[in-house]
Image (cartoon, rainbow, N blue to C red):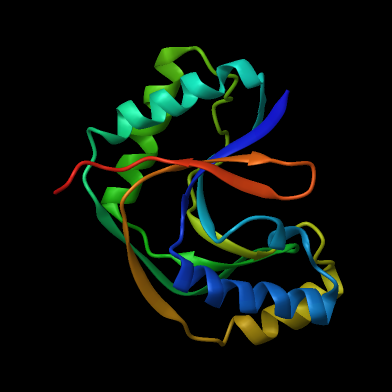
Length: 180
């Protein structure tokens, strides 16, 4: 059994900027959990799955992606899930919401993969610090990041499958959306 998750992975230039902030959290507050994966917007949170299903899941992601067209994701400023998570905020978008809804529905109707229906509402974000950011450090860091400005966007051209390697998350497959 391996652990997987499915996400939209940011392009390398944005990943490098996010990495600077993740490293800030590591150096200042000892937070390293967010450093274990590239900058991303989670579509399907981590789940355990038998390795034998990996190719089927890749094929399903590919089949789904062939029906989608590229769209932009905008990042703007910062947000928090108090008292442990600070993130770069994703601007609400109909395209992203539709992708999330249609993809999760697509996977659930296949009834082949051990993916659970998410109870929490979809709140797209790019995590900078998470469960290893403690309350006192959170207050101090949020004081800094709540005032910080940041804005960028990127063209989403596919969905990635990530697998945990016992230490970090590796992108093992990225689909390609149909050309627009």
